[in-house]
Picture (spheres, helix red, strand yellow):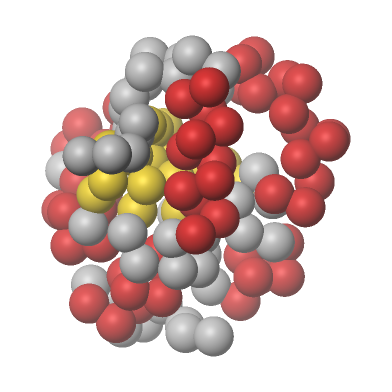
Length: 115
């Protein structure tokens, strides 16, 4: 694998979120506030990429570098950027959610609105 971080399918995400140990997961959503308002998954901390300057300096205070970190966006592109950035900052267990919330809505939970 050429990526420096892992990947997780939306189906696997659905199983992991339903697991009793789900609270051990560190869940990060990098979409914009208006996207989150329209469609979101419970338990995700929101770090919009457009507000990078506001939160980037404090990310290591707010997130655990060694916790399993799953990153979400609309289709998986912005979350991949975030995964690269987190890995560059010493995060050791980062995974991009392939297909993003759009794929999650289609394949796991159709009650999540699509946009």
